[in-house]
Image (tube, rainbow, N blue to C red):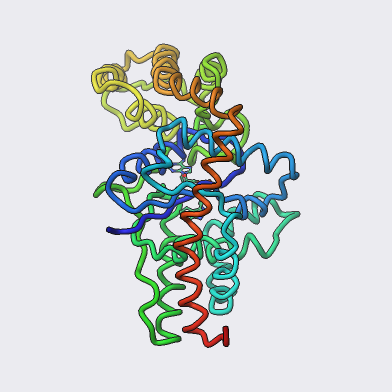
Length: 330
Ligand code: TYM
């Protein structure tokens, strides 16, 4: 059975981008493949969370995995830092990762713009750690959003380079995966770019947002004064609202607002009201489950412990093979 690995950073609550970009695929994949889903807490250290923040966000993301329906019986859910084998593989892969290629990575360029006072080596080597996450289980399928495509290409580069250098076939090639469809980019509410945790206040709708917060955020989403001629192409902020509607609303609702746009009768206030209610319909059951699960420390501990054990069995095998291939004496 093919192996799947994917993760989400523990830097805050999950938003609709995480859900439609990655989590929705986790849910479909867990029945069909050998799946490892983890919470990327090592990765989150690039932004220097406090210990209290880190603990809370790992618990929160784990509760959100479970609330969405990730089943610890069907797959392996674990916390990245419970698997130091990943850190060892990261170190080893870094020996064959070149500074030039890491500096050219789009996510690195974005990050140094976002946090100019904290351009740490962890940011530069983020793709090597991500490659280690994937290669440690010899995964071939990686459910992610569109923003991760370049990281997957780098994971293939690092795995192939290792194989070539040591003349082995240790690592298979991992590919981003979305059930035969294109990878998804969920837009944010700020009129440009993607929904993201670090894109500024009000840009992301979180699964754990209460209904009144969702209403407020969506009503404040960037739009414009409306089309002045029929059948015009939509500007980016408006396309974004339609894309979000396409994810959560009935096709008839989407068609109704498309027609209203084309005939210049659209009222964005009405459209946003409808969009907010459809998002709430989607998130409400998740919201309730998240509130219950996040306080259940016994359950969370149990899931983390059993995930750690299963993930370790897989990782230990790979790291043993890698050490032998490299030529360590023991
Ligand atoms: P993170 O936390 O930034 O994102 C987690 C997942 O959510 C997807 N995603 C989106 N998809 C579509 N539209 C959006 N607006 C959007 N925002 C986020 C991301 O593509 C990702 O799939 N580096 C990874 C975490 C990671 C990982 C791994 C993933 C670490 N190691 C190994 C796969 C395999 C990340 O971006 O986290």
